Image (cartoon, rainbow, N blue to C red; front, side):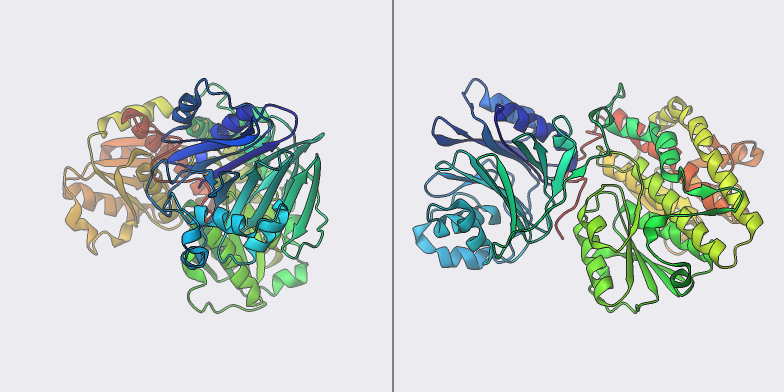
Amino acid sequence: MCGIVGYIGEKEALPILIQGLRRLEYRGYDSAGVALFSDGKIRRARSVGKIDALAEKIGEEKFLGTLGIAHTRWATHGKVTEENAHPHADCTGKFALVHNGIIENYREIKRELGSSHVFSSETDSEILVHLIESFYKEDLKDAVLRALRHVRGTYGLVIIHADHPKELVVARMGSPLAIGLDNGDYFIASDATPILPYTKRVMYLDDGEVAEIKDGELRVSNLRDEAVNKKVEEIEWNEAQAEKQGFSHFMLKEIFDQPTVFEDAIRGRVYLEEGTAHLGGLNMTEEEMRKISKVIFVACGTASYVGLMGKYMFERLAGIPTEVEIASEFRYRDPVIDEHTLVFAISQSGETADTLAAVREAKRRGAKARGIINVVGSTIAREVDGGTYIHAGPELAVASTKAYTNMVAVVLLYALQFGRLRSLSLATGQRTVKALLEIPRKMEEILKKSDEIRLIAEKYKAHKDFLYLGRGINVGVALEGAMKLKEISYIHAEGLPAGEMKHGTNALLSSEFPVFAIMTDNQLYDKVRSNVEEVRARGSKVVLVANEGDAFAEKLGDDVIFIPKTMEMLEPLLNTIPLQLFAYHMAVILGRDVDRPRNLAKSVTVE
């Protein structure tokens, strides 16, 4: 949520800033703005709505200059208004600041600043720029450092000043910022996506670090103004990977990316002959792995459903008691963990604030913390003591699809690796690896049914409620299917273990309440079939996901999506794809903004 772009160098800043904001649209936003040093002063333009509205407002005005900052805002403090949009200015009009995060003590700071400062917005961010103004004595970085020592909360900020046309200051505490470097040109952004067109050389700031770019030189220090040596990394992705490549939406492209990125996730990590997997990033010896007595997955949203599937995988394949924790709740209770507990943090962005806080709490209590992350160099990836990148590439749609699939794949590989080290038989290991290698081809078969699924969505477009049912490992699939439908089509949907229908939910069933059920051929098939019979007896229409050749499903479902069969533990890798496509087509039919649904953000970097 919220996006920052900054530039200082020799190029015209405005085109870089506007293009950068467009590349951050997937994060979710409700207003946007830019500030440039031009003709000896700071010029600002802000607008509510899409970036196109901002570009239109700038119009023919001469925003010329080689130093500038820009921002997309997702409202937290204050309504969606132009006054609350970033960049914010101080009383003199010489400072301009963009800020992601939340300043927790902003009311206290505002009282201390008193009536000598005039505030024009309802935001905590504006308080920050006035605080910096109050410490300014001709040294921009010094003013920032002094101000930040009084701040409690989170921030990723970039600030410029009209009297410093060749200087820009960047600071981070809990909100990610990357700096791209290219022969004296510097590009600042909330993530690497806006930087890709210009350079692959990136430096990621850590919490408590301040970067000063001045006269073409970059220096990084901590809040005590002590120099910090930073590593410059190479971005793995290329610019083409971040484009739609002919698809109508990023989400559809990313759904169709799944066979390819799944192969990327498992390549070089599975061994058919030994019937095992090996993920070296775990950074644990075999003896340490054998001593693990409990596994905990901490995650939010879609990633938490991956954790739920991981619970089945670890307990079935590895025989290790496993828990799934919603990260936003984890640190507010008293979790029973010790040095023999392995905590996996699952996050596409690697910046999810609640998951990061859960990691820190787990480490504080002595647990081993590992990450399952997509974005290289992200905060969680740096704070855990090991883990695995899922290699899904950039995921630009807000609704996660290919990253979800690769997270499931990596969790399964970990379960297989631990299982083979313990009591999982060679034959079962080999059968699992063989089935994994067949998944991409089976994914492609399902994707060919996209038009068929679109026609099913057309039939149900007038319905306002949906229920998704699954059992066993497919409970997570049902939850994820409901999540996808509601987040991009704005249709109310619930996911539920099918066996729980009789405990209240049956009261909702009617001809106006269709049910989507996962009824694939596994040990719980007969149970799910009975639950579907209950649904039909109460008048609800039924859409089934079933395996090819299931004649009973054809008779039982009002609509059936037939998919290839696989091992039960691998079913989420296939069973979710029809639900992704159904949600996508429903959203398109209803005219929704598929890639950027209202009120949502790709990376949730505030608690």
